[in-house]
Length: 407
Image (cartoon, rainbow, N blue to C red):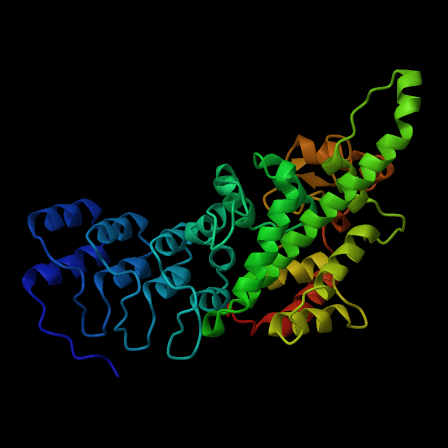
């Protein structure tokens, strides 16, 4: 039942009208001439902020937030918050803006659905991914300051921004995660500390009671697994380098080995004709199995999906669990190396495989060169995911993850 709203003043009515008509300049002028609180609602219990979010107008939302609008205030008859309306509008940047101002990700409407779940319901995958991957900067600040009896912080303060960017990444393909670890200043050199912080964040996320976020806890766990794999590969390379140091000195070959590149090649290598990189698949499955919270919904659903008689790839299951299931489209452009969306560059020779940049093309060449000529002679739609695979992955993953809550 809708709340009983007080009679609106003429100015309040004008504010609603200008928001509905997306009249940005006129609204700015009106607000400048009238000092008014943004806590009033219409007959449906909707505030000006909720109306602006429903329209998906980021500029007006910013204006209202600057006027002091409460991002979590909700008198709506069906309990739709400003973030719910933003998610339904399909504006991912608007969702990020609201969350940056403290919008609650776990708020539910009258049918028990969170903003991310409502976005998924209407197919706004970008909003789902943005919400599911949002981490408040304050969560990072906790780890860059000594806590309790600690002499030093778990994470060096100068790494706060790099670490925050690293854990906010939406593309969770292990190769892209490894590349981002290398590209974010200081993280690779402090990989052991990064791993410990991720493990701490995973535990903290799963012990928040009603505010527990299984999706984010699993993401922290998964990222820590990739970092741990990088550390393991680093140690293995150091041991091999120590064994070969005499040979290097004798032959004068001082070629430096790149830890990340070596691991990426291992993730990409396929020894069979099915196109599935064995090491990457095994690593991802093991990462799922190592999640400590066996009774959690996300763990049981992923394990059940992977244990099916003809399961989809592990990366599709992990990505769907973290970012939400998305519909496949025939014109989807996915980088064959790192899984990045909107990969608009193709192999200049065969035109059959796509990459997001030259670096990914270079990294994949050792595998692609074996098939490049053949693919160039016989370019078919099979260069993309086949319709059968699309249907299999979509049905298998979505059937088990569609009810997965952000909680």
